[in-house]
Length: 109
Image (tube, rainbow, N blue to C red; front, top):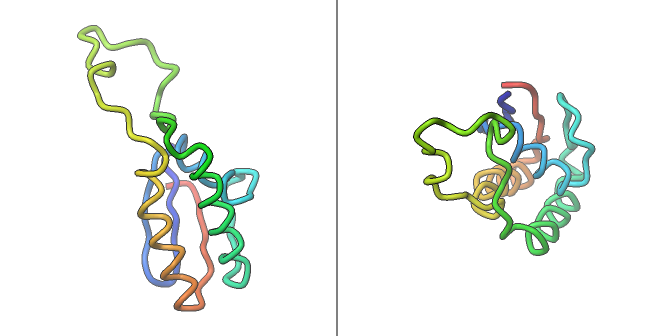
């Protein structure tokens, strides 16, 4: 599944596993669809940054981690991407939303 984050200024898409992890760091249950009102975004961003400081170095859940390994084991050769890296576009989107007085919403891709 894909999750799309959007504001009046644009949108980004992310695989559901890291998106759900980041939503939980924002202080939400991870229910989709959902939203954070502009006035609540600064606190949510602070919670996200605190969560990333504690666990952002952990490789983010990859899509389909529960699937069977590929025959040629390509998945094990891929470099794991941590949550800090995956969070960069979302953090930038939230900062722009705060500045533009926009809400943050998310839904299935």
